Length: 319
Image (tube, rainbow, N blue to C red; front, top):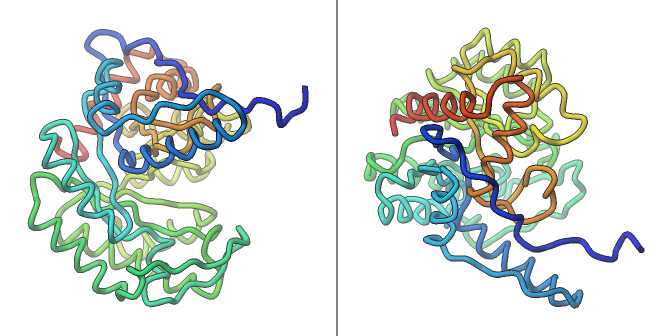
């Protein structure tokens, strides 16, 4: 069978629901993005002669999550046109959906057309909203966070990404990160960090500026050494499907290092689908697969880890 034969683009089967009393919260997801992602998967499947993939709406996606014990999500808006989308979803689903808002590190340097191609080799693509300066874009984050205090529970995702952004724009990206740190502190909100190929830079910046009291590394990707620093600083680590990927021993070791009172779970949907379904569309209903991998890494019962992630998420975000 040729390796191009049948990449499965269908939805992964629903996992077994979490044990009674062990519901949890997906603390970092992009539900609005799941819909076009699934639509693209369906087009690809049909082009390959595979059956179409169903495309679910927001209510169906949330319903599927609740059916397996996911009692809430934090939906992340991190591009200027998506800020209000996350807020609106939280307004429409009170108690179930909360919003986190920021200008993503890769977006921050595209505003005002200041980007530099990164090691990923992709060409820069400016969108109409990048005509807006970074300062004005961040002012919109501030405005929505103060106008919708019941919905907006975090500033994020912010941080640094030296895979997508080249060395020439590194300091611009760092300045944007520092502006978000200041905003999170000003508003008294927790901060979600995006850190890709930039562990040293992110840690240096947090230590230099003083991290917000509740600092969360979303889809944590560090090694044990970084896990030690997180433990010393009291930072929180949020684990995505990558905790289930082969070769990510440093991620698993870090979970053991920080322990149950500093861990959370997330999908980062539609990306980072846990094993054995990597490559398919991710959505909040997949959380139990990631929790199982996390529990295995920590050598603890699934229910205990699920309950811990819920308790930590509630405490950090006040949800």
